Length: 397
Image (cartoon, rainbow, N blue to C red; front, side, top):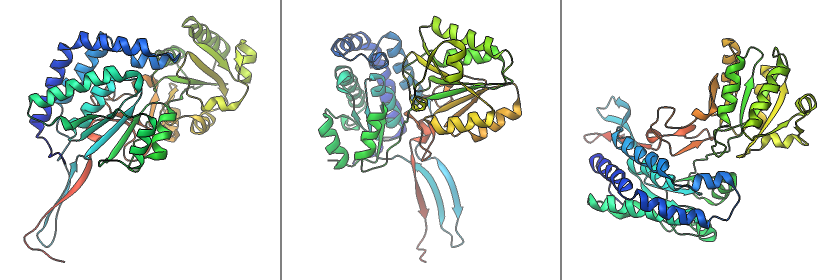
């Protein structure tokens, strides 16, 4: 077992990682080009996540630099109690031990997610996708160099070159202790990990996020929030569904404007029975499509009778990630926000802010759609468990 590194050493390794990423910037971009050339799929969002360019390297450097500046999440006192018998009792945060991160097509995860887990005092096991193998191995090489430069064992970051069968075998019967698994990827990957893992798993579920345009909506805000929500189709915080209140004034004009703006950005617009009939867009053939996370240039617009109906609809179909109400009515916003069952709820703002960096966490390991042990973006301060420290002088019960 690796002994917990001091916070000074953990921070020094992170800062060295920033220096190495800058030094090896061009080499990493060139290696990533080979991964991009080798990618044979036609999933545009996957390709987008696989690509490493200058701005992606900048983000990696920013993330490790920022992590080094954050408070140590380990050993934070959460509760203390003086027992009648004189014992001193403390509850403090503690690292999990070993965190395994299983992910697809995202070399930035090899820096950012590993960095968060490392700063929280954990050993990291990385299992990336074959499509990003060259990029990932280059980044792991940099981790090992940063660790060695500060007399820390390279074991703190380990890359597992497993195929699917080997991964399944490892999940079911790990050859070393694993305390937590974080799958980062699509629903198939998450289902696979959940099915086979023998230790706790943080579920980063599907997006499928909804915007409800209430009858008292500010129309300009509604357009901006929807368009911005569709501005990055590969993100789990993208908007896929729009519900328009049937009592919205100038409803027809609003829908027409919205559709033309979406189409100008090459976004395919689908409609429920009412919208497709009145605005000549393609009609959906089954309600099952309301469950789908698109990750594509595609959006579905429907009409809804009321706020209560919108809440029920979202709670039935959404992925439990993010939802928005656009309204100037504070009471209606409160009703929506308290009753919609998603990790993040917005009033007059874009779902694109469901992101650890944007919500003040500095960065994130994943966005959890589970309710235990943390919901929504999981930042540095959440990637800890806890431990009881009890100090006595011979007390017995």
